[in-house]
Image (cartoon, rainbow, N blue to C red; front, side):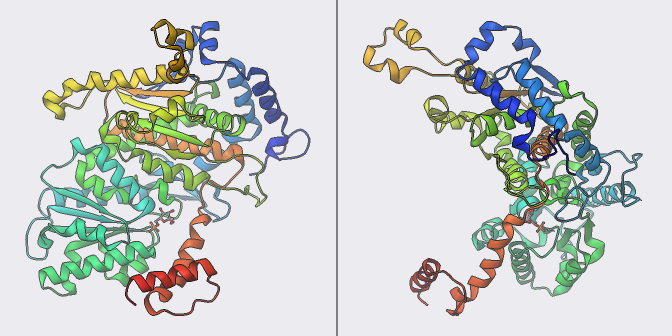
Length: 552
Ligand code: F6P
């Protein structure tokens, strides 16, 4: 989609709305969050949004009503909502791969009609969900047994990128909803250590491998899956006939699955309109469904759908993904912020930021626009972070007193999970840190406040906190499957909004290809010392050193 501005140019940074924002940035430079709250204490009430179970507070941002209005004008001028409707309507908005982008169909109700090229995808979506549910129940109920007749107790998901990060993250997040009498492991790295550690203490007779790969050609996954098959057959002392009971596949590529030796009946299908990093609510979530059960999985899908509907229908002033996307543009493009921190105050969200890294950085780490022209503005930020309390004792020093502007999302929950028993008593302390940190980041501590504490003059500068660090607070009642779905959908659509504004294709990932091709080319140099044409002098020397150290 190409949108043209009043001057007949579609270059983003030449649009009047962009220039109005740059002017506004210059006019408001030097304004501190303390000034904004002094001038308008009511912003604490006004700058909040409720989306499903998520309460969003965006009052601690370097914005005023005028900033928000100007940002929304930019969104309108760049056609964000038109592109959203095109995506939801099944149009091929992934232009470089000529594909529709329909992860929202994965969580739409059965009664919905969503068509790609005139073909309603919803019956297929729900047929696969049903098949997954039957399978998950058979595993959980012990009806599906292994080759020797033993019940399956261990699930090993083998996949990488979107075929690993989503299910692995969601399994951790929803751990307290999982079958505690089963073992779930996630293998992704082609480093043999990953598979080795995952299976070394498992009984092969009780183990099921779920091979998750959209393309079923990804070298890491196929290598690990082949090794897993070898391990299993050796452990069981069985032939290929054992594979059917111990391997299932999640893929769009039935031909390759069959070639690998997995019965197509044991394949759970999805479609080319599901991007890898948007796929854990498709068949790619099978390991999660076995862990939390089909009912929990559907609750999670309902959470996704709730935010999809919010994104589709909420007016711009109340649209949470739009708001988060615009705030990111404000800092990245107008305040030179290079990164964005996501800091959950829940141990269960340990892998959440790693998941968002792929979602955001693989989607918006682009430097040409949808027509292939270089962009003249910043695109996706570096996304990083770990659970907040641990971060407080590691890198928060830089957040508080470093020289960089790092907008951050703080995610927390009012109620601890029942599972914690007496340890739930620690929750208030956890959350006291959650609230204290955003206050300290926003308001800091002035030199006068430091002096008033009797601090000697030579330490005043060291103990001063500049403040003015913007944060969004996302607070929910409790971490449930639905809340997880809501959170992920919120970030998915935020990423979408930014890609639409920057006029980039958020749904391709050509940047991962070159490394893959070169790795294939370099391998014979490592193993056989083969001459690899086109290898640069530095890499040639490193390969020689590697072979020497390897004793070859
Ligand atoms: O290398 C990047 C990537 O293509 C991701 O986009 C994708 O999630 C991952 O590899 C795995 O791909 P597949 O599911 O096809 O194995």
